[in-house]
Length: 86
Image (cartoon, rainbow, N blue to C red; front, side):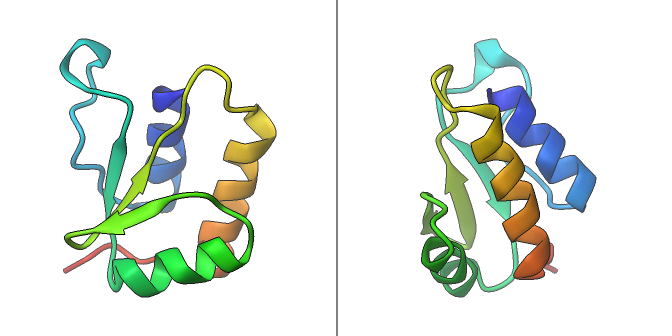
């Protein structure tokens, strides 16, 4: 599911700082966005479960994460207008 999270990030132009190779990463995908804390708060109000730390949105997609949850992430990131950090 990490690859699916990268696909969402790529589609929306949000840079991922997590290594792309599965062998090089853990279960968290970190995205660099402007106002990560505020963006995470807006997403949480919409029911998206994620964290924010150090200017990054932190996602934890796993094999049991349903595809519909990643689709909701995509939709909500668009709606809150998440933007890449400068």
